[in-house]
Length: 373
Image (cartoon, rainbow, N blue to C red; front, side):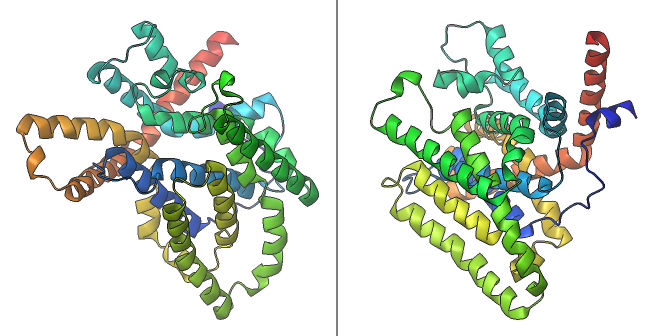
């Protein structure tokens, strides 16, 4: 009971907003592309899915935080930040600890001027994302930087939410954030601020700006949504948005393919902002389809799939090499097999162990709180 009270965010008895089902599907699909980017044996990488999908996911994550908390008056203080961060952290941290200890024991060591204990602690404490050294930032469970940065964004969310209370303020802050985001990348590209060793892909500040840009879309989004909602059951509106839901991803694929090495990353961020804003209305027939229980269950384990992918891929490759099966596997077939295994492990963990491990983490938190306070 004490823990529930400790974790409670002031909800002001506001009804939970409807899930954006199409956007949930887009996030799930993005996770699959990221998994493929990491484990598939590419002959030619025509599209940098690793970067593109991360940009899309940070924008959509910020958008969803803003969507869920718009007009709900989340307190802006450190206590709320810690509570809100922990509510997200407890969902993935136990699984991440499993990945960390597996990687620490069974994966090759990286050559860094730090001890094994320092390497382990930098992962356990999630501080590796602030390292200027790429090898450390991607050490042990290399893909976990994404969630560490996302946790950083969640920690600052109560502060960031103050910027979405008024439309004019949010528009100004969006333009300012977009200008800072693009300016940083332009200056890095021109070699002017390399002295700060800013990393576009894993940099917490870069990703925070993308997260915030997604959040800042919300006031304008709701001002239009309040007007459109009275027509949401109109079949012609549903047909129009269904066409958008089908064609917009195809347009994104064309843009990513055609301008893969021509656009800067921030160009794609702006395009993804438009995509999330438009498809966020969720009026199409695909939204109804993805609201079915089957799809909700399938897509519910995307976080677990993301976290376990590196460990499963490492184990799979060790088994394949040991049995000398590598020559008999078609890359596409191997990817499908691995994706299926990743899904089974991810879904099983979520269904059977996630809440149990989260409760153990809760108890550890209470013990620490008791000792310190």
